[in-house]
Length: 640
Image (cartoon, rainbow, N blue to C red; front, side, top):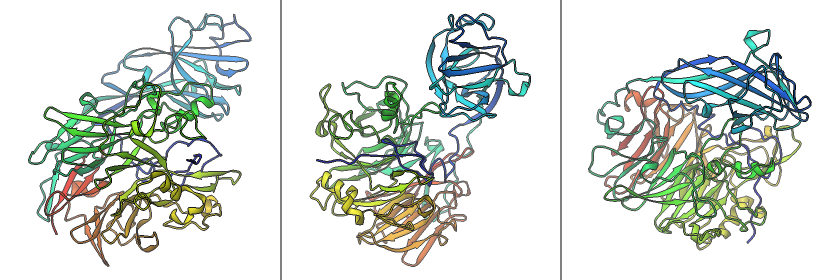
């Protein structure tokens, strides 16, 4: 069984800079074209502290003190390390962010790292021989330009008032220098910038009740989350909501208040180590996708843990760390993934899908593969007992009735892991300066199941019909028909580049599709939404039949989610930058915006649209994501 190597890719039109054997940082629509708000509730206050002591040490002068110098130096050969001490006082509230800022007076291509360090040093006596050891890595930067401010995230070292000791250490032999607290220009001296949440603002009132038009709304007043990233219904009519860092919410059929579940209840946003244990380190919970399953069951997708500033993402950590001689951080590379959550009499029962591949399964990656962590969309297919995951780098399959991870310690196989990962309809392209060829694959928000068990997947650059049912449920045969060099016909360029395969497009020749959603209709045609290009209708073979953009409710075609309506074979499309929803049936476009939706919701992003087929009439479920000032909501439409 042959598998393809996986390379770096571009996301949302950002040019790659070199040929890699792992992927670069994911740049998702949520963070670029859509401009998400910060998930905070309270008032914030920022304080700037200057150091009470700083000094560098030099390996060539092991007994000399440089505490009175106006320069902090960092280098690997000869070895220079710089130390800073801050006294943080007067803070009230919870620390949300802390940054170390240094003004660079010399450039470097290998940016320094910042660590916590001990307190047993004094500015006037510190030498290379007496320097304290570096302790916990906080963050690093990749490069430094001269005459600029450089920032490191040091939030983990600043918990409140007290003394903060930091060490700035080299990651290479291309040294750099920064202004110290003795610099003659006081504006260029080191800074510790601390932001605290000083209090909570009362939540705005929930959306008003609908004035008819077939809409009902659920939100904060019913115990719903502050931010709504996804909404779905299981076959029993229970309403499930992806509530971001607040966790998973369910409004059980017949109830009026949501129940909330977090890691304390059993959610598991992290995978298994090869010995079966949990990864070490702080765990991170953010529920970003959900799909209803059998009665009382939902499939839940997580976002991977964000790394320290300048460090590799959950997609890259596994491959990037060994390349620079360090052990990969399991709290990063094993974060994210998905769960199957089942309601019980007392809470929930959770089965985890660890979306990875163990060692010695892929010839090009004998250590194993850790790529999929941000689970963007999920689709459940009861006919094939499948659950399909659209993710950051590709897509994957899980058995929907999986009993739970059962691999014996030290072993791994597809059956005991319950998953198969990952596939992507990637293409080759030139990097920004046309010096190297890279592989493009990213952000598979499009996931929709066809009647025969095939699955349509759409990503940032290409889409595919994953021919799972066509190949009698043979995952690997379907993979070949999406990835193989002779199957370019099954890699769909919906908004075409200037050149197609086997040609390699330059950045100027690319028109990235940036798919945000897919919906297979009853006649097996497929509607495709794009974050920036509107809607496209494909036939069952992938040929484009029509497009819409300015005809939609926002007048631009910034589409964030789509769903097919079984009532009349129309398609619903949500606006990414606000405006409401469009509903396309034939040549008619109905608009649900101002005058139909509560005004508080009109200008929110529609983060998800799904259909509840468990009731009659069907219910159209709409996730209004929420903003800094107004909580999100779930809209339920039962009208014609």
